[in-house]
Amino acid sequence: MSAQISPSNSLQVKALQILHEVFGYTSFKGAQAAIVEHVCAGGDALVLMPTGGGKSLCYQLPALLRDGVAIVVSPLIALMQDQVDALQQLNVKAAFLNSSQTPEDARAVSNLLVNGELQILYVAPERLMLTGFLAQLAQIERLTGIALFAIDEAHCVSEWGHDFRPEYRKLTVLHEQFPNVPRIALTATADAPTRAEIIERLQLENAQQFVSSFDRPNINYRVLPKTNARGQLEAFLESEHPNDAGIIYCLSRKKVEETAEYLKQRGWDALPYHAGLDATIRNANQRRFLREEGVIIVATVAFGMGIDKPNVRFVVHLDIPKSMEGYYQETGRAGRDGLPANAWMTYGVGDVVSMRQMLDNGDAPVARKAVERQKLDALLGFCESVSCRHQTILRYFGEAHAGDCGQCDNCNSPVDTWDATKPAQMALSAVFRTGQRFGVVHLIDVLMGKNNAKVTQFSHENLSVFGVGKAINQQQWSSIFRQLVAGGLLESDIAAFGGLKLTEAARPVLKNETEVWLRRDVEVTGRVKSSKAQKSSNAKATYDGIADDPLWLALKAKRLELAREQGVPPYVIFHDSTLLEILNMKPQSLIELSRITGVGKAKLDRYGDDFLQVLEDEVNGIG
Ligand code: ADP
Ligand code: ZN
Image 1: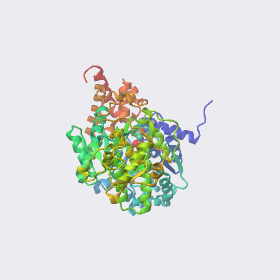
Image 2: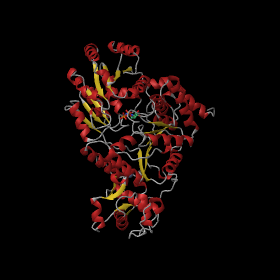
Image 3: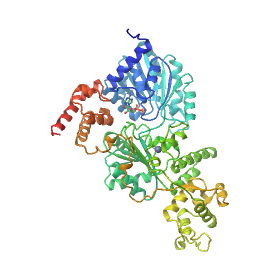
Image 4: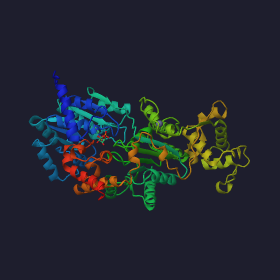
């Protein structure tokens, strides 16, 4: 009995064929199959998928299946070249139009477009809005057809995020002028208000929504109490990322430069990036990060949007981010390729105090400040949380998560909590008795009975709290204060130059009406123990020990050589995950090589022989 092939069936067959032959993938990831089918059938879609979820395929594949050219609207001008390069590697006819081009180049692309010789065109939103261009599109729709409109980074319509692009608001014109062309809007921004705004602003009320889980299972989250940040950072880099590319976030431009300089002097390939740097330097640094292997970028949050380097192996926060949204987005730049990656943060009481001051001193309206404050508090709650990091993050974004991850710091070495009511009372009284205007350092001295009057010109020897806390050491006190500030029992007083004062929440504690339970910080010294043993259990173990495997190095060297010849980033040739599969499978023929994820027809033709040769040389000991 022969199976009936319905239109939807034959669509699926064709989609799978393109998935194999062009993209080199064996199967769809997550909701990709459903999205591709929906868009191919002409429906509008809103796709919410985390970074690394595989969003590009959701419009690239329908672009190849449907008649006519697909128009991809993206604000990421700097990325378009790489995206087009990557598609051309797959023999897809792709091009872009944006302000970075010479008029001649733009004209050449326009000619291809009008002649129906393009399958995918990336355009910047301001370019799309030009009346002339819209008229041209109308003509193209009549002649050769428009396959779809993809609106990438759709959250740019929202005024609330920091990626707001006014031109995105005008994209409703697409719907109005081309009602029969399907639209697919995509974003990795998860929160409900932004989602609602995207639907409203882009008139996507009738679009089908595809909401993926926002979990990033391959990211291993860790938050450490700050003791000696630079020492802790270097120990982390040495033991876990001696040769990897990563991003280190700092709050201020000054700290970015100092940290980059420090790391450079210590022999790390570290480069600074912030909005205050000269544009040529900034671009050169970003370019090195993207095109070379193992470069570390030290940056403010100005660095990130549009960095789609798949093999960022770690993201460090030397200062706390402003919100959970910020933390999730910044750490999310690690491990796009699905291989294990680390999100690592150190944090101390000083961070909380200075971040709160920064928000309080800002010139946002009062209501906005209250929101910012709440967001910071949620982040601090996350830092101090004793439960699974993945669960805490997902709960924040309103998503249920099944079970502990088993790999984050809290899952790995479960954190103790302890009844800290008595010490908390001591700390709060010390704040009160000294007049609610001193910082943590002085308060700890008072509690430990150290007279620092010479430094501060204040003697508190006669107070009842002087020396009551001798049984507790400096580091423990610092942890207690950090948690009291993070928990909102103490706050910094701007009028008193950031000295600590009590909040309403402190009252019941002092009156012995509430208990205070705190997390027991793991003892942290300047050097962090090499945590190989702690590494995630479900991490692809193969990736850990291979840093100096000669075959791995040879494969990477070949990739870099090919990338340099063509002036493209190495991952445009093959992703790490593909290279890793080659390393593990050691294919001996083109057929075997074609079965590796990420090796489609075009790349097999282009690079198959080169990489088989590397494998052969290595076996024969020539490499
Ligand atoms: P996003 O834009 O959502 O961050 P990308 O489109 O960059 O994600 O894809 C993330 C990674 O997943 C890339 O390395 C890509 O090659 C890979 N990928 C996407 N779809 C598939 C698939 N069906 N099978 C295997 N790998 C895939
Ligand atoms: Zn966990």
